[in-house]
Image 1 (tube, rainbow, N blue to C red):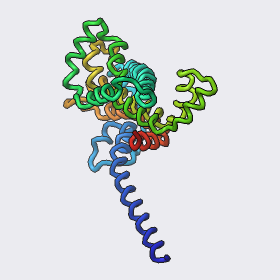
Image 2 (image 1 turned 180 degrees about the vertical axis):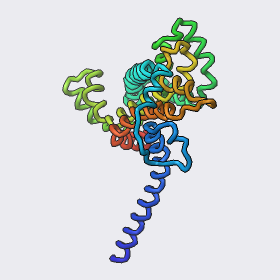
Image 3 (image 1 turned 120 degrees about the vertical axis):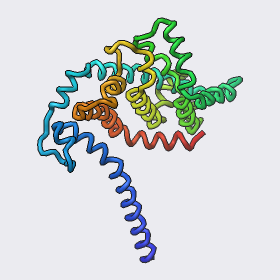
Length: 278
């Protein structure tokens, strides 16, 4: 027993060291970027490089604000992320609930068609989608940004998987107590899949925040650009101002880092539960 316990402890220590090393490899570039955003330009390009800066400065953020409309970019990214995520999570939750808990003709065929859209790359449909949205008069508008992002097949699949794993007794008890169908969904069923719901919120906001292609297609005015678009136009092959570039990357990554830290527990639990059920 003692030998097995020692072997088990050694294995745990070995696994911990391996994962700690992998985490270090992932985190070092991020830490380098965060620290470099507060470094003077000369220290960023100095050789040999210094990890810890001798002088911390905010000049990079000031120069970034003078070069690009960073406040407009941040505002547009927040609006895009929230306006696309909130309706999407709501509608996908309803769709997933219907596929999981209701029996209707053509349910399986319709669900397969929804899943089949996952095999179509966005690059295939982006030009027709752009023409449709543009012809509807939604070019350079928040509605044009948000509308194509409301229905997401993977979100419907995850919510269906989460709702499928719930016992039928919950519905039966609610109906016996006279709860309406909407009340049953919002008061009884939806709180039971909170981890998956939070996971969709995190994924939706992260996807919209980092989305580059669609906002670049559907917006032309600089005041309508999102943060990822604005920084992509600012940071190019000829960029020599590495300090402001690091500052822009810091601004871009910070909200998503905080969001993930806030929803980490729900994110992991929701990903696991929605992937093994249904």
